[in-house]
Image 1 (cartoon, rainbow, N blue to C red):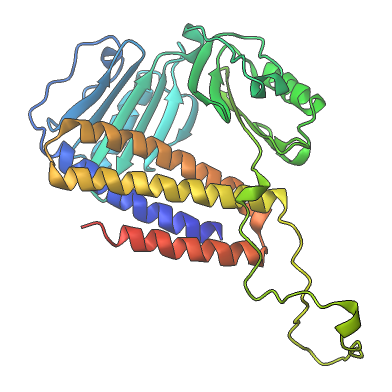
Image 2: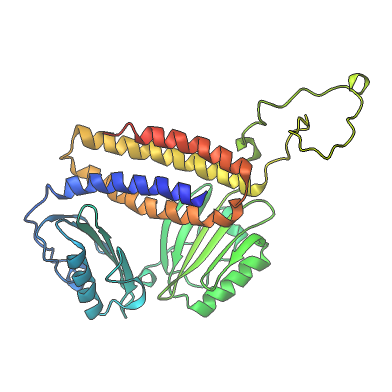
Length: 352
């Protein structure tokens, strides 16, 4: 199932990066900025690109006319400048991510199909303070020891927070504290990740990102009303007085016409249904962005929307991988997924 979903995500990637390439290709002759973050990076050889973010905490730029060779050379230059701490990827892959000794985070993403790369550098997470949410959902897990970091998003259903100044040993202690708080249902644990629910259905994801950074994501339970109704083939109940005599057991294989309703959906299935519903809503937003771009391809804010969607796309891919073990062999979930898949592909086919 995960492979099929990742195929859809790959289709979205091709379409989204196509939008980005068209926009980047219209911005030639740009000059590398003089900001503090930009000065920490090597200057790309290509003169085609556009700066999308240039603030005190983040610098992001799209560089066109960049083939794999130029991408590899650029990553090597970044490594020479010290971006080698807790690295992932390499100069021969499509993505390279690493910190330097000062905990500045670099992310370089290359698209081989459209020959361009995205360069992002952020200040150390532990360099700025944040306030732990005061919501009821935040009270379900311990408040981290460090108050240095950033809140990526927060709403009534949950939040995503990066906590700095947190060593691997302190991360392990925090995981154990969350276990003590009841997040033990359907858990999956690795050396640098922990995923679990509690009895009330709240979902928690913990990750050690490296460079003394911990990632915390918690989301509320799925309401059972979001489950789909039982299949239409369900037959009406039969009163005891009119029920036919029971059929003797047979060794021959038969197709069951048991009128008993199927078991109530499990928490995993409900989570999967919510995941698909949210993804379908995200697809609607994505299609709206591309339609706006087609109507006005020179509108710079479209590029901003595109870059946000690229970051969200990576998150969707990670979430799809998390559901792999939970849904392996679940035929009911697979049927539901395939139906939603067809709707998504139909929406994608409308994009010119």
